[in-house]
Image (cartoon, rainbow, N blue to C red; front, top):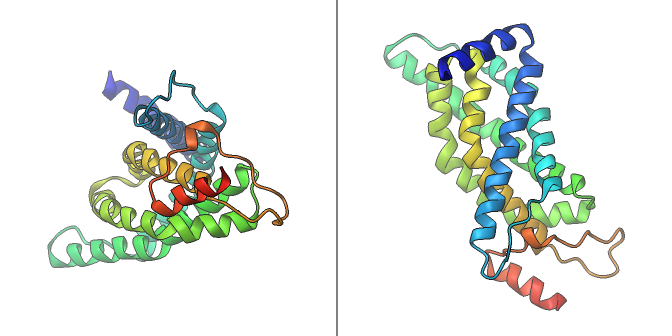
Length: 223
């Protein structure tokens, strides 16, 4: 069954690669956010019945769908510009170059883009984006470097080109659960002065878990 589904997906992807990757990546991004919401709910004492924040999930679907073609083009660029010999020390060196290029160039931009895009999809302003990046960008980058260099080494070294975005998308179910959670915390932690123009949208209940002392103090100040 799995093999049949994979063959069917491959046949469609070979005809319409960008569209297929966008749909696949968007769907898996939504699954990751739903998982994050479930985890948040279970970790919240007295949260009551689980209520799915469909709007938040839709933002992740949108982000995943829009990013898939960009990822595919980036992987194609890596493939073309950094050759990978079939074996030996040159293979290891080429693989290291690919992973380093991806993690030092693309990952920092991609994660910053994620927080900024989510910020504006939530209806917030530039000031909230700046605060969000200041508080959560570096911790998210640290988490990225604990996971993605190994994933991308496998991806660039052994996964065929057509499957590289889907491979990352499957891993991203769990990664998206993390960054969805991190984004929810950053949204909850923002506390701008009253005179700041374009007041921020008040965070929803499902986005109210605060992992840092600073974030808790921010909420306390508003009570």
